[in-house]
Image (tube, rainbow, N blue to C red; front, side):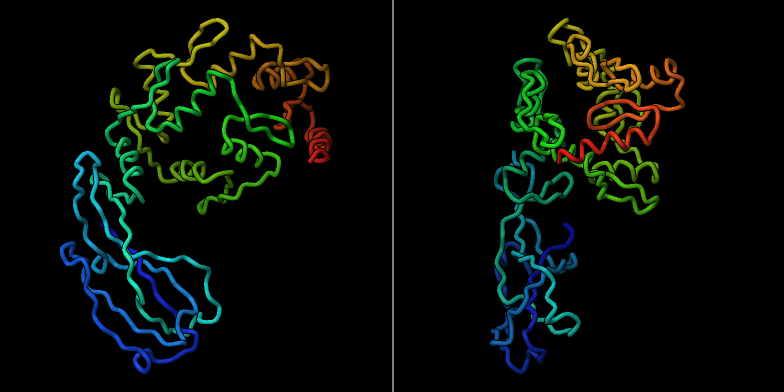
Length: 331
């Protein structure tokens, strides 16, 4: 196992701990090989601030195997750490008192990769990522999921339920997380910035995947042809080319698709909804990919500028900016 957490007390006033503290060695849980920790009897000048630090490996505890072999991990006893903001009163004075009270939490370590989980349920759920088991099956299409919450979200693709609506543009989403990400389109916020090239991203997962384009890392490998991929979803979509499986079925005509994105794009054919509108002739299109070539070929513009909020297309960037003001006024 790697390191562990320990709690440090910073004194309210700078002073030598040995002048006002009584120290003693404190051993506990010897059967678990926890090692020796130091305990102080504190005076009134302590406990101004609690600091959480990461201990080296040789100062941390060892693992105790779980009695339940099916859990796929081991029980870990760690000091309970309290995280607070930095204390300005004691910054830089160099005085700290080590572990006034050592309280142990039961954490759980995966025997495959060493990942620490906060409870047995989380450990069992994590273990499924190694076994590939997906016990929660969709009654409609048979697709499996590791967690019941993931199955619940997936069911919305069949029912069409999207309970979370954007108050700016009215677009609806299946999960609160998807809505939160969508709102970054309106704010133009990209809080996660690549340290190598400076490119910004809306959420941290996109940054993580982008970083692999610099490192060349492709951690996901197809077990059929050996091709490597940046993301698990790309590999999973690729694997369907080997099996011929098309799990996403159109409820209107029964046509199958490899991805849910392809199904949604196809679904616009059956609906009267044409969200992408040409501002020059007011012709509507089901897909953004149809609007752009229309404006370039039909109206002889060099580039089509598409509004990310409502899908309207404009021949000039200035016209798009002027249009975008209407959305901002609705906020």
